[in-house]
Amino acid sequence: VLGGTGCGKSIFVQVATGNKEIEIGHALKSTMSPLIFRPYRPLTFAVAQTFQNWPFYHNGIHYNIVDSPGFDDPTRDDVGIILELAQYLELTFRAQFMVSGVVYIQTILARRFTRSFAKNLLYLRKLCGTQSFRKVSFVTSFWD
Image (cartoon, rainbow, N blue to C red; front, side):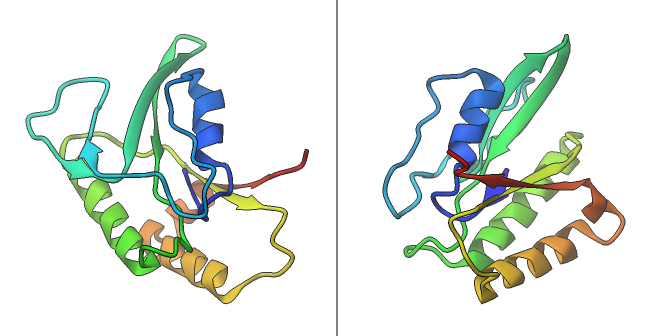
């Protein structure tokens, strides 16, 4: 799950997994901090990451949903987050965990298509590749 800081990524993950232990931030800076990658099955390596992995079942199928730090965080560089994401994906791929799709959350409170949003989409497209970019779902938040 990707998107800007404060767009509702962690709330989305909390609702999707049904896990009330997922921390929801209410400040302008991201609440994500480095922790150990926790897959639903043991890996042969430990990876300190800022991406939180939350396993859950839906209709008898096991899923892992990954919460990420938000873009446009005043304390972090977006390129750094993209590079961490690339490293995370490489390590999980080597451990034979495949990504089924990406949910990109954008708040409807943003009235304009900002330069940083456009750059993040460009980075995401380059990271995913043209073929896999079709597996990115764009979701809007803050409709209530």
